[in-house]
Amino acid sequence: MNNSRSESYAAAGVDITAGYKAVELMKSHIKRTRNEGCLDDVGGFGGCFGLPTGMEEPVLVSGTDGCGTKVKLAILMDKHDTIGIDAVAMCVNDIICTGAKPLFFLDYIACGKNYPEKIATIVGGVAEGCVQSGAALIGGETAEHPGLMPLEDYDLAGFAVGIVDKKKMIDNTQVKAGDKIIALPSTGVHSNGFSLVRKVFDIENTDINRTYEELGDKTLGETLLTPTRIYVKPVLALLEAVNVKAISHITGGGFYENIPRSIPDGFCAKIDKEAVRILPIFKLIQKEGNISERDMFNTFNMGVGMSIVVGKEDADKALEVLKAHGEDAYIIGEITEGDEKVIL
Image 1 (cartoon, rainbow, N blue to C red):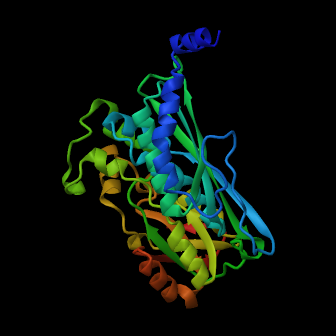
Image 2 (spheres, helix red, strand yellow):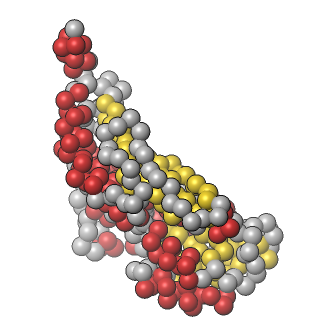
């Protein structure tokens, strides 16, 4: 009876043995991410993680996200080793905005057909993102969806959990006029705005390997697929060095939606637009798509993956700490009194 059921499931398009093989191939990647909180190996029904001690009032902070239609680009290029970094980045960069240190991550892959080597490559990228953020990859799910998705297609999402002592949470209540706004550079489009990017370049019907003078030695596909930068470790170092008052992860909605989320009522983030180091890919997108400047700043990160508010007296030290941890940080504006929340 078991054999007939297995054969019937296979006939329906789900290969159970492929799932087993994928898990075996993943294990070496997952092992890289283990940290002091891990309590078991991947393969059980639930991922277990021991909470660190020593906090007066520990608060768990969670975030969930995916990579949007950037996944389509990975599929078109048949390059799957970095998209997992994006999935982790989108979650851990969100939770670090509260001051929380990421503890663990779980991924979810839905696919038309489970090709074990491809799934393991995707998870390898997830593991790399976890290593970059210090999070453990403690579990996940690969769901085969024949008939629902084309065989070669997949989607990737996940969620992260972090922890912070309640008294150290970043809640923007200390923000005041005169505070400085620091930019952390992005690596490119990151994982937001790809539906517009795909339309501008007609990605599905064009040569993804074509080159543009603006992009230097990289092809269009290579530039767009550049993984999202993970800011966790530099920001954690900054939190130990200065009083960080607010952090914004610049994702979908660009400057106009994301910066106001960390600015309290009665104050405004005044951004010097000329100070923003706009990356060439955004200038190319704007030119090719004939997109207005406001729409660009309202959709993309424009070269700023994260903004951080610190007191004027701490600005120089903050820049030093961030640069010591690999971030070419720079000041893009200051906090003023006002009701607009953000002015460019």
